[in-house]
Image 1: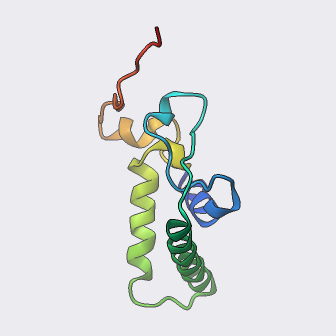
Image 2 (image 1 turned 45 degrees about the vertical axis):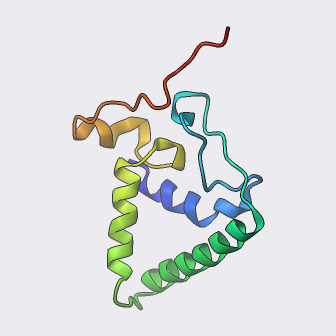
Length: 113
């Protein structure tokens, strides 16, 4: 359901301009996500977080897991399965369909006058 795509998108989020960190509200309903810009401090914080995530995934791939690594992978699998499809997971709303979760209606679609 797109878990690998979700993780790849997360680990490379800062490779884009604007960074693929925050999808604009309701972007799942359009022609693809619109991304919000980050401020300098927010960008720095996300850069540190992503570097830590990349190091974790390298450890896991090398078989050198540390306590907490499996929990993080489980968290990402859940986010990828049930999160907003804008972030690369929950492909075609499959995760939502499997648990009979209604397609989100927020924000409401408004036709421009």
